[in-house]
Length: 500
Image (tube, rainbow, N blue to C red; front, side, top):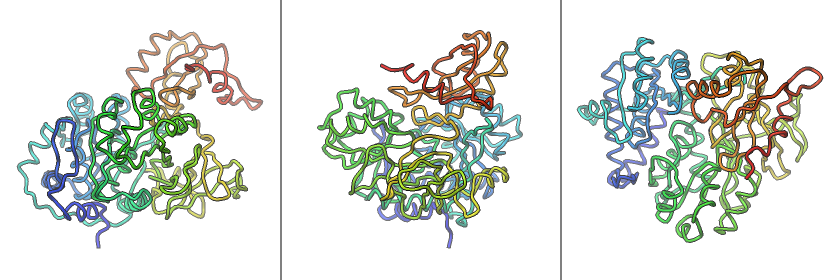
């Protein structure tokens, strides 16, 4: 029997094909059958164009329900879905294309010039356009195809998606997610959060990473729920659609912005669950939200490499400052430098194991081996504590990663770019508290660089979420006795930089 995760979604959608699956902000109400038909036609187009199971399809598109159909089409055709952040700039895009070696590329209008040029240089002839309103060559050509398409059989270990996450070396790593990985996580979350066909998910997340694409949409498709599918988050949109919803998923920034708006208990009359992830939820946000609404936000913990690992419980205690116990099927342990489990409440390195955990990094066997233990646990790079009753708390990140607005930023990638510029002796990129984004990227620079020119260059070369909110010139960087830059000291020094 095929382990293609699409088969699970299809069986749910076919249970009541005329029922709505997504309400859009333009007033369209998309049925389950319509989503299935689109995905069949796109899969047929890909098949007739010569794409074969295992081929990568690189996608940089604006959010749309047709984009969801594109994702499902890749699954049912046995292709590997490779989504890219819409903020990526040409230098970043070129690396992803060269490394992933896709057989096809799909883009929206704003990204067409950059991505098509890079694709042509790489010898990729299959390029389609899909705009945020659903128009473009992809849907035009797919609309001429048959509605009949037999889902391609896949094994649990066959790749379903390839997502990239930069590393401490500055070189982005391809994270290989299989059909089995995604099915394990989808089943666990469907059960843990009790999604049902009566739920309406308020979907305002981007769909180029795990949170919006896999966590949110998979919960809807697994349960037969509906979603209100909006292009982005704004407090105004949230206030308008919350009364029609039962569940909301967001990053901490969404909740802090809601609290700064006219949001109150009346907006939550039909809500049963607010979920937060992708970045740490501040204790004060958790408490202020409960005081305003009488409801506790459910915080969970996941990574691109692992999908979801833990979650505060749906019905039992949701503890502020924790990400809850391990989800069923996932094991979590906290260990010391020698790999020995620490006592309850002691800080150590977080390791996870389970069917949700990825198989490894794309074409990086040495890095894969380095990040897994002999007994199969993945070293997350996060530091944390486990309570005696199993609640996990994240206390830091060993790899100095910054999470700004729910998006991961890896300092080394930015430092390598800054250090190449005229007048720069060296740099250190850190994350500091920010009232809106959770953390803001800050670059501390030694040398006599022209800061205006440097800021302009960073704007051209880096996605906007990676760009430092502030460049700070200093005479020297703090170092320990071994000569290593003390980023913790820098974070402490500039902790109040964005304080209100």
